[in-house]
Length: 170
Ligand code: FES
Ligand code: FES
Image (cartoon, rainbow, N blue to C red):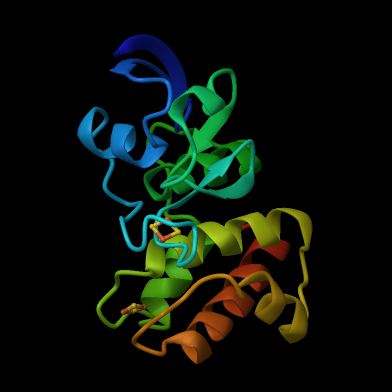
């Protein structure tokens, strides 16, 4: 049976109507029309559906929507706003998050299906580890699968973003 729930996504409050055990991913897609997170395996195995929950990466395909009540969900679409908040600048016309810009600069994606999860996981990493070593990056990204083999470019992009973030966005 559907319940009325309030969830906070990308800094905005939303009233949604869903069963308490509906996967968060379905609510993001079907009610909020946020399609950054992708449906891949549906089993918490691939990472395509990742979002940040209070800043930590979670798999939205296996997270019941009721579990995010009272917490902050950030999707790929919310990374520019998160970056604006970190820098103390206006969220009205936010810039791309350094990870998103690095992904463009390095031309990381091939088919693109996995890339949402890669950027979300990298955002989690860089929030706590400002200058990650190559080994730390590899370990952090270990649970995300890319069938196109873009791993080397992902590593380069994360290192570029880390440098930009360390300079405060310069
Ligand atoms: S779709 Fe959620 S981990 Fe694969
Ligand atoms: S770019 Fe195709 S799955 Fe990663």
